[in-house]
Length: 334
Image (cartoon, rainbow, N blue to C red; front, side, top):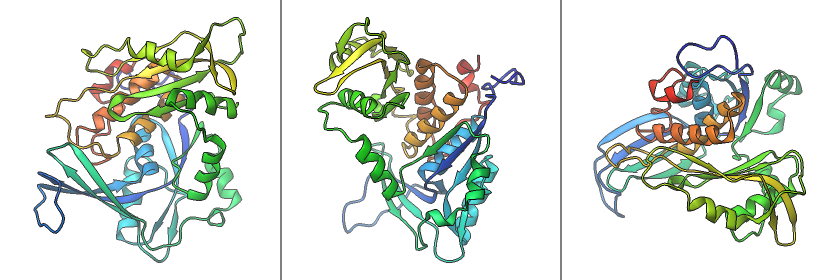
């Protein structure tokens, strides 16, 4: 941690610079008392226009928590695009390397929030400008934007690249926990893998640096089941349960040495749950901060789940994102 951390607020990591690449867009959010049926008319109870997009949301979260994000994305030179740039800059996201198309329209999403069922439906419009291509970025710019960065984040929006990654990591495992082991075995440089499960929390598998053959060998599904039984349904705030270090096996793929974690989500009362838009992006942004701050896996998962839940108590993907000095984060400041 940096020695100049404030007496209050989250600690400022020594390495604060991160880089994000992916989507930004304008979110047009409308709340309704119930989801509309086909061929009907209804009034919204609230309307909000706000920046969105996975990369934009995650980096906004990271910036509010104290990091210094740089974003690589593309917008059009229209009112919406300029507003997106301004909004990101106000939150502390460096937009110096954004690509601005002279023509076309900036992407946007229609988001309908059903206040009765507490669900939202998103309709994405990709805009009418050429998508970002490698030639949009010069090699000198890439050297500059990556200089001093601690983490680089990709939101998977660029389909061609996402397909290559998916094909490399793809697994036919019958369960999520088995899939995590399979991915770690196929990608030996990965330190950990996290899968988010919405209201059911998340699962994380961490690799042990040294393959200790003397450790107990366990079936990953049995370990997951055992940890799940230890969850306390009476606790409303996020928690994290960890296994001991062990060797996990999958059929036909061998073993890996690691630790399994189950993170629970906050149980938000219906009266406080407003909108789940961007909850996953908030989780990612908090994970980026936790990595830079060297949080332990248990604290990292608990922290990320708490930030994601906090964001669900306001309308839109960014309205509820906490700042590093927010009193709600006090328990994570030391």
